Amino acid sequence: MKIQLLFSTIILIFIGCGKTKPKNEIEIHRKSAKEYSPVSFIRELKKKNELNVSTIESNFSKNWVKSKDLNSLISLVDSKEKCNCYLNPLSSYIPKDSAEVGGFAIEFLKAFKENRKLDLGLYYCPKVNEKEAEELKSWWKEYNKHK
Image 1: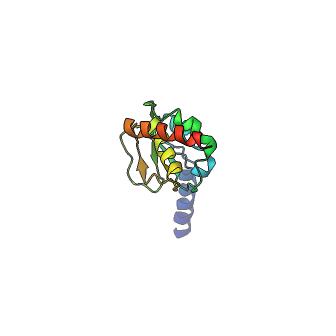
Image 2: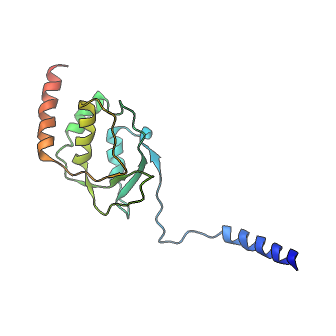
Image 3: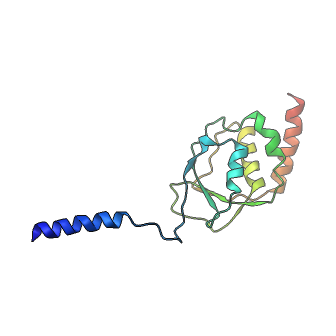
């Protein structure tokens, strides 16, 4: 009797393993910041999903934003185009807000300007800050004069 019960349990476990995901289950793909440039990172954030978040591991190197990225990022600082929030896979909170492309461009440029490693925390839903955008555009003009 015990052998039959054990055998039945094992069979049920194997049958249960073959179940498919429900149609309404949301799939989140985890990626690494190392896979992206700042511009491709923003492009990834523009891909809409049901949760309005992009889950990406935040292993940014100190020099992740390169001087070759600056021109593209400066052109985006005023963009109020909606995009997903950034979500660290370690976060237990899913923001209900949205972000703006220009908000990310501003943060990336500030990291370059301040020569610091980018840190977006557990989640980040930046909006365009017009004052910061103007300051960065002025800085960009000065930066180009000294190149």
